[in-house]
Image 1 (cartoon, one colour):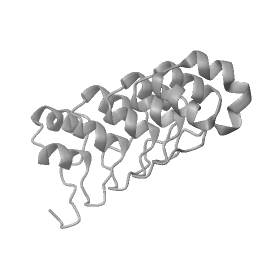
Image 2 (cartoon, rainbow, N blue to C red; image 1 turned 120 degrees about the horizontal axis):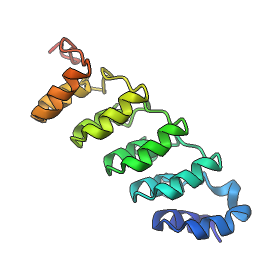
Image 3 (spheres, helix red, strand yellow; image 1 turned 180 degrees about the vertical axis):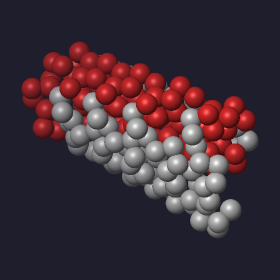
Length: 169
């Protein structure tokens, strides 16, 4: 089983194949493909929480980043796989990593208008006032996207209404 097959098995959610060949390829579980995606990234993109749990339990690196500096947690949030997000957070994934744009997993959750993901990230200590490279907080993003429900939700959770962006707006 070549390292590409680990990627394929994770992307398909083929936990049996991962378990069967784990002892042969355990040192390759953190290998990246051409897009710098690991098997964990692919499992998160496709919502395979059982595979995420298996890989996290085998001490794979939870915070590796793809070519856009997105972690598996960010991809699970972007694809709205709450169960994968929960597994990653339970195993200590870093919710404060920043993608190439400076967005954190919380920024992505706000952009996806997912109150349940925002809540989960906040419960695990995500910074509600984190700023991306433009100086936008999650609240600023909710405002620019005109997501009234998310704006109200973030305000209830204590988002700073006086936060300014890089242009002092």
